Length: 114
Image (cartoon, rainbow, N blue to C red; front, side):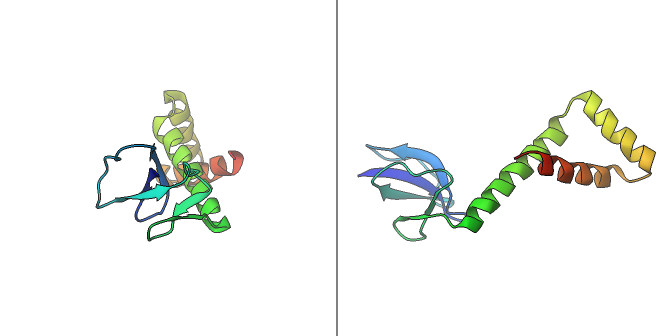
């Protein structure tokens, strides 16, 4: 039987799968579960015991929202000098604090990106 690694807190498949041998992991934060086939990153969750269950619709929505949030954070943090300058210029133009402008831009960005 194959093994897969899951996050204990979230139940998410961690992307590590082994048909033979052990999976090196931190037992405090992860759990190795015996599986018949490699789990799907979106559709499968650790059941909290010794198996895998299908993810719920809400879990899939939450996971998608988390990915959009992380992408928006990465774009804001790693944007070009020009995009950073535009954000600062818009914040100054409207007289709002830079963190407020960034938060509003993040919301707009998340609405635009699937």
